[in-house]
Image (cartoon, rainbow, N blue to C red):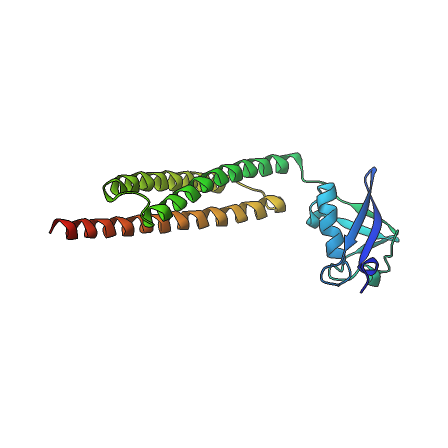
Amino acid sequence: MEMAESSITVMVTHASSKHNITLTGQDGNEPTLKDLSETLAQATGVPQASQKIIFKGKSLKEMKASLSSLGIKQGCKLMMIGNRNSLEEEAELKKLKDLEKRMEKTAKKLEKVHDELTRLKNGFLVKDLQAEALDKLDNRVTAAAEQFIKILEEINAMTVPENFSDCRMKKKGLVKTVQGFLAQCNKLEAGISAHRAKIQNKNLALTE
């Protein structure tokens, strides 16, 4: 299949602006209305749920339909009606994005603890210093977990109106990710405890 066939450029008018949208089908399939809608969401900031795509006076609804089956060819003109997220929703989204940044910073700290624990397990430090190093790692994991819990509390404290669909999706995704990181904290703490027990057993064996 030639590239030219699965790639199409259309012109979409939204409010007072015009957007030339080029779409390429996935895995040799033709571009669909859903592909167009997703690209328009990125280009205009209008969420998919708020879009109304109009071609030859008709509102298009069949998201799975290929553009060619809807009669849309290279160079066709379409129109989209729809509002960007309200300023209120944008403000809520920004809050969520700030929380996401904080989460990512804390996650990086967790990654460092993981790397250092791996090095400890590989005998990177002499035994006497390992116990102290493990305590420090343990404290860092606890601090990270506290940060994650704080972020979770702040996310849950946000009341997002029903119609803020982008916000609700982002919020849901964030909660899931933070919970994943909390699970990682537990795993790391277990790893630290296991290694501590291992050293203590070795030290006991040495003193006997």
